[in-house]
Length: 313
Image (cartoon, rainbow, N blue to C red; front, side):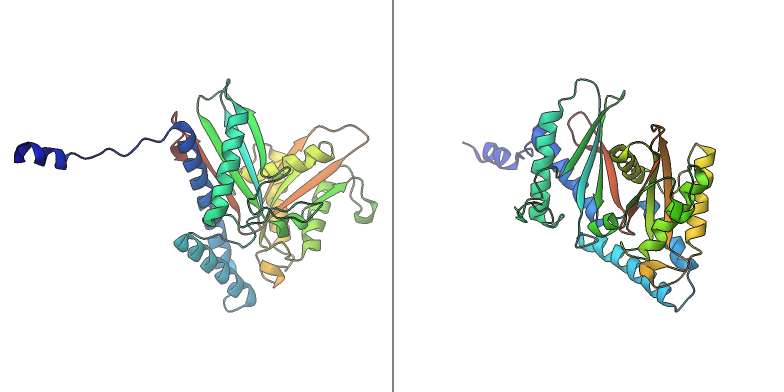
């Protein structure tokens, strides 16, 4: 072999091995989990930043909002979870017709396990009967996975990490509520939402954000309320009555003086997002899903090879 031929062989670069679809899906899902756990979406950050500027300087509320902002910056810089409670892991998958849900569900579980090992998720999921923690974040009903067929040819994956503290101050009311003088109308709905925020008193790591569902049965009402957390904080409800309710709830609750972490101040709520569902005449439920300031919600569009094509928030 001549030196010239040998040199050519040495100079030849080996192309990186192309990931197969399963490996690529897992890589994409792990990255989605990492970003969701460590970086608040732009709409949430802008809302928090504006709220912080609104607090009176050198007050406890001003200090609390400053700590929240520092926490956001540090988590992003170090790529570490925003909170030690990485919460219930909730996936929403939107897919085209003919999509195979079962194998994708298994890849989600694999990704959750690997993300837990990497430290993007804490080992938070325990068996409710035995208290056993497998250390994988896998178990009956966890992660929570929801599939929807849509017309697009692309796959969208949205993820919410719902902390236990804010879940504890979520609530469900049945109208009429005589104790609150709340009837079966939007004024009654308003009263029970404000009551839920008043009872929380900053617990659940306020300032919070609300997802609300008016109507439905007990299960669907809670489900649709939580799904409202997928909306951007700066969007506007197309239903004018609900848009007015959302605005009124935020303005009213921010006058309660509860403030961030219950320390007082002007920032009790960051947003309120409401929807409605049909009900039977005998029931009138109002469900309130409370989300903490560490509003961990993100989403991606995957290309045909299941690599991340676009971030949704």
